[in-house]
Each structure stands twice: as C-alpha cells, then as structure tokens.
Length: 396
Image (cartoon, rainbow, N blue to C red; front, side, top):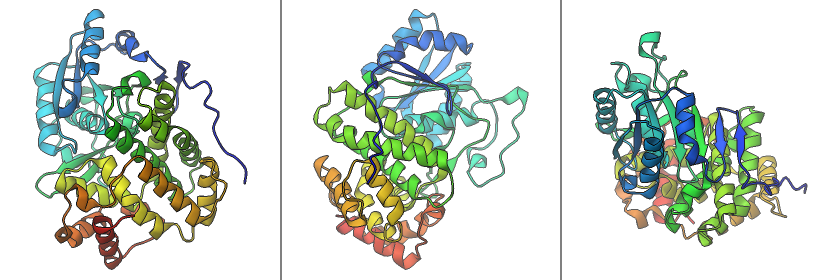
C-alpha cells in the first residue's frame, strides 16, 4: 500500500498561506497582531473568548500586544462551551455599546463560534436565527457590513478559524443549529502553536480527537470534492504522527504545530460535510453541555462500525495516509480505537453524565442536524436509537 504521509520536517518554520483565507502560521506569530490590525484598519476590536479562558495567559498577552500597538480593545468572555443564543445577544450588545470595529476570536471552538455569531448580528438588527444554514441568506448592504474578523485558535481541534459557520444552541428548543452567511469570512487566521502549549492534557486529547473525526467524517461524505478530500488525508497524516505525542509530551512544540495544522486542514475538509458522529454530538452537547470534542470521541467507534462496511476503498486511503500497513476496515477501526484508548477517552457517554432516557429524543433531534444529511449511510430512527443507546452504554 502506497504511503501518503505528509513531510512535516519544516513544521516550525513561519509560513504565510492564502487558502482558503490569509493564514499566518508559525511559533510566535501572535506577536504580529498589531501590524495585522493596522493592515486591516482595525482600531477598536472586541476580543471574544469563552468563560474558561478569561484568565488564561494568552488573553493577557493579546491585550498587551494590542496596547503596545496603541489599539484599544475590550474582552467579552461570556461564551459557554456550547455557545447559546442568549450569550450571542449579550455579545452583540457589548460590541455595539463599545463602538467596536472588528472581532478577534481567541480560544477554542466555542470562542470561534461565539465570535462568528456575534459578528453576524453586530452591525444589524437581523434576528440570529435568520442566519440558520438552510434559510435564504439575509441581504447585507454597505451600511451594515459584517465586522472584520481575526481568528486565533488556542486548541488544535475545531478547525473553525477559516470559515464563517458557527454552531449555536437554541436554548428554547434545546438543539444546536448551524448559522452562517456567505459574506462573513475571517479576514485572517493566526496559527501559533506556542499558544497551545499550556493546554491541559485532557483538552489536548479531546480537541485532537475532534480534529481526527472532522477529517474522517468529511472524507467519507460521498460527494465529489477533491480539495476537501486532499485536506482530510493530509490532516490524518499529521494526526497519526502527532496526536498521541502532543498528549503525552505536552511541551513538544513540533507535535503541537503538527496538530494545529492538522486541525486547520480538518476544518477545511468538513466544508464538504460531516456525519452521524457530529449529528449525535451536537444534540448531546446542546442538552447536556458536554465538551464537543470529548462527546465526538466517545461516539466515534459506534459510527465507524455502522458506516465503514461498503467504504473499503476510502478506508484503505485513510489507512495509507495514517501509515497503517493493513488497510482493511477491521484493522482501521482497531487502530482508531487504539488511539482513543491511548489518549484516555471514556468508553461511553454514561461516564460523562448522559442518561439512557434521552435516547429517542436525541435520535430525533440528530436526524434534523445538517450533518445527518451528509452521512454516507442513511439511518432510520430505529437505527439511530440503537446507535445512541450503544454510545451511552458501550461505545467501544
């Protein structure tokens, strides 16, 4: 089997990429935030982060760098691990009352999603849910253009830094929905692996597993999209070499860099779509406020066993990218399970507080998720009930 491994020997050298948006990659690139803001004519940004990151050193570092560049900024840290519509409303009001002219998202996936959702509503009076994925995009004129957006991920998992889509919880419905607008795109992403060095071991594992799942699910989506497929395979190549290393050697900057690039590639890959892992995880997170990456990682083994029979050619390609000698479905599933064991992912959702009495409710909600429609195998409600039940009781 041909080896598709990516050459990552230059992973710590600064790089400037232009696809799919401008990306500044490399250790220490956060130090360029002042000149980046100046080039984008940003004078008074609102920094958006999650509640758990407000006191993290990267917030202090960012504020200091902006202050040195004579750029005024405020921090909004009212975003939950699963961003809520009421939090987005509060963030939008903070943006307007502060006279801000841009949004800087810094943190994990929740910070990215929260910042993008705030950006969608900051310069207009359009209701948040009018930006829901399946609705006709609202008309945005010159007088209410979206604010400029800079994304700075501090975890290597979500891959949310290059696109304008966001997952937000509708509190009233207890469901997550994808919101977006074709005119909202990040103006710049800063990928600085040094910002991920302080990430706890558990979060390194959970977010890293999330990146892996993005690439696996996206690659298995049946539509023809070679750009996304290429990104998915290169992401898996980097993950196979760096995920366990980043968890077990948290100060290994090479591994951190490899995972940050892999995460970004995974985010590009899932423009093609996702699958049942995310469909289920989105609704579990909306109802029980579980960590998205951890929930995904627990559910993954159940869905690989459901999806992979019939996808032998794709599984072989993924196996090659991840440097596995045996490209069979059984072997690939075993290898992925082995990674989850190595990074200490729990064996079932029950261990993180998800009860059995939610099965039918979660199944029905998941079937309405945008990721359900792009799964390579159509699942009935009965099958969904079975998959959710297995995830809760014995996922692997």
